[in-house]
Length: 192
Length: 198
Image (cartoon, rainbow over all chains, first blue to last red; front, side, top):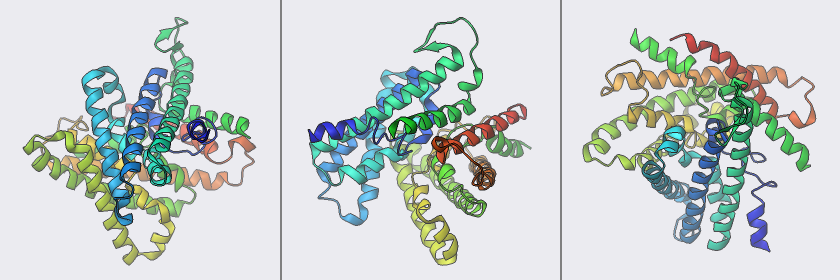
């Protein structure tokens, strides 16, 4: 039961990007389409789960004063892993996401969960927490990406349903800010 | 002339916050007052130039020499974390008031993706669209200065607008971050006008 709560809290109640406003940079930068947003979210989920597991395993070995640098090293290692994996097996998506894959290392969500949860809880709970938070993040990114894709290029997951030009501004930089602003406002309205 | 072009491109055309979405956290977090925004901008300028120099040297003389480019992410984040610690200690001694004002956000420069982003762009040599010699340090420094000035510019303009917005009647759900993001979007629209500049 407790694990289920740990898992589901990341989706709405403590959604990392919509409620806690963490990890805004990739949210704005990679959501030009639903598939890009989803891939970014899943890559972050991978790093989040792995680093949560490792950090909860080694939490008693790390002296308190150097815990943040140690967490960063753990996170950076897993970011390197996903970076190389995506480069090898998903070169197309890797090309589109570009700089944002190595930048997962400075995503506040990952370090935030390490410090707030994994450093205080057991392995299984940390794994579940990382998975829930990561999937909540991926879901938010996918929805924002889908909305921007529908409005901006009249297509969804690459399938164009109307053969016409969309509102181009939504796939450009300003659309990211507008989209996220109204997304947060809507979630706040229903979360009350 | 090419150096001026690098600065204009990095500062206005490819503005790090409004066109590339890096460094959004401090952009939203410390933009309540113009004075703090200037302080944060100056801190980022200092750290960014310093970090670019150090990471460029590490990339060129260690990672590339030994053929271990895959260690880039780990090496760079550790260098930046150490640099930020140093700046924090210096600032605490020299200007306690600024240290007070920046508070929690100075340690957060470590996780400011703008710094690491610029370091990686420079390390990979992908920032260089002017056809300058990518193997020398000077264009990298100029690029870092331009990017940091762009960050500062966006932050100060944004803080100025937000100071005035404090008095406006904003609907309940849009208060705070959503309203700020809408303003950022309008600013991004304005900055798109620079795209024909270079």
